[in-house]
Picture 1: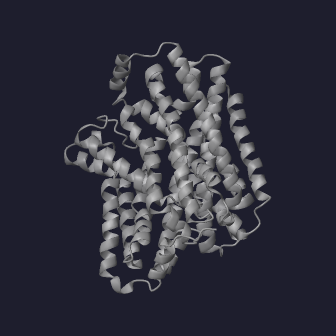
Picture 2: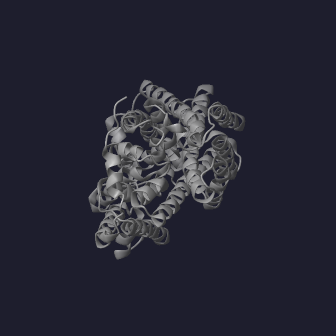
Picture 3: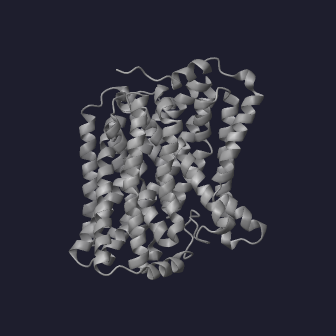
Length: 507
């Protein structure tokens, strides 16, 4: 792909994003429009928007790269990413919508009747948003660098500029249109090349099962993916078993704590619509993840030499398998979809972070939201430029582990257990944040688990994928401290819980 084609593909998506955002601006007038689209987004439209923001760089590029490098052990990622919405459907979606809150800190403040608990939640939501934006910007840097020859920071800066502009235009109302459009663009951009390449490989003579097994065996431990996808032992044995379970806990419970996904349920008209939205999202994600998985498998079978490219495999594979303009066109289509992934996820995260900062620091007005939006983007942009490239799916997986250890216990216990107290909630969130954050820092100091010796190897493994022990720890501390401080139960807890669990009257 020539730099001109790469720039054209990226620019086309950016321009389309701004134009769709302008359309949303025409009907974004009130504070409710900016924060929750006035709670009028219907299930299909909202499900498309959720798919647009949820399918991040880790899904669009990282899943194919992990499967290319790690083989079948990486299949737990798309399974976990999708199944997390089943957990959301069962435990959170409808009650959260009935809460009537604008943001997760709003929910915490209303449920617990505590300003300190609200502010603790606000800090965590902002931190999670920043941590999640960074991989999107790193993915943009990777895509721009390999397709245009421009420095990586240019890709990160371009995504921030477009997203900040689109979010400031019309807030949640505008971004809903943008993200719904970008979901269908992403689905087409990865689905069309995946189907075409699969048919092409079969037409050229599909590899035999023996060849496939040999390729899997040869690549199963080729490299560490940066996120512990099971590259060392292919997911077998005690170490691989622990790693797989920990990944699944992170992805299943982490989805329940993603602020940018949860805030979308506030835009539904009622709890019934929120449940219907979640079911549609499950179906959309199930279809989508077939395609990056297909690209990863095709890469292992037909282009094993691309294994060293990691997350770039989805962009490079079409040109590697199909010579001439057609292969270039397919790669450009994948690149456009990747750009949509960076933009849509970053915009959803920026809306959630800017909403919290605006409410906490600028009074929650539309003007405050517009001031908070560019401020919210500065920290992740600086971190992405300074941090360099990492395996996308692995780094996002660690963000899921962090949300599973902090926001998830607050929501699950806050919705389903009367006994949650402000002190218990804050103690549990602080414990989860310190345990998971400390594990990630320790993992960086210890290095990959396979490089450590003796007991340090076990510690390194526990730190590389910490969710299996940090999530139960956070839940346990939250429950234990709440029971010890039961005299501080918020007075309005019973009334609030009745509101969460009482179905709305049918129209």
